[in-house]
Image 1 (cartoon, helix red, strand yellow):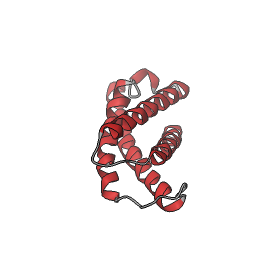
Image 2 (cartoon, rainbow, N blue to C red):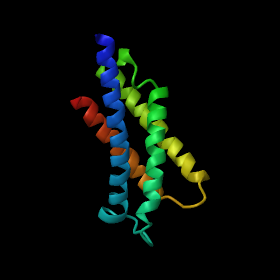
Image 3 (cartoon, helix red, strand yellow):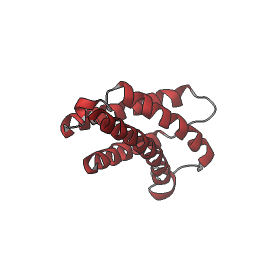
Image 4 (spheres, rainbow, N blue to C red):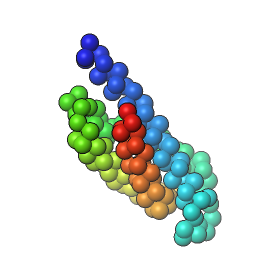
Length: 132
């Protein structure tokens, strides 16, 4: 029974993390190019390019979070340990996203957008982990 409960919880957390990664990526786009826009962008890039990258970010999130142990059973009861694993996983996603953006030559992504993304990602993840 406990194993089934943990499987359901982990499935829920994985889906939630997918949605959070996508939402943080989109929120960072809005912050960078429409709300804050500092330093001023010379031109606003097409949103389609950032949507393509969002798919990669979502896949990286699940891979990094799984490999870093975010969904392990023993960590689900200790909020402090789980919080550390989530922050470490978010940092891994951030670094791998920067690496992927560096090697992708079809489009140049904003580094400030990446910074907004990691801030939004960690804040939303922390809030949802605290509430869940």
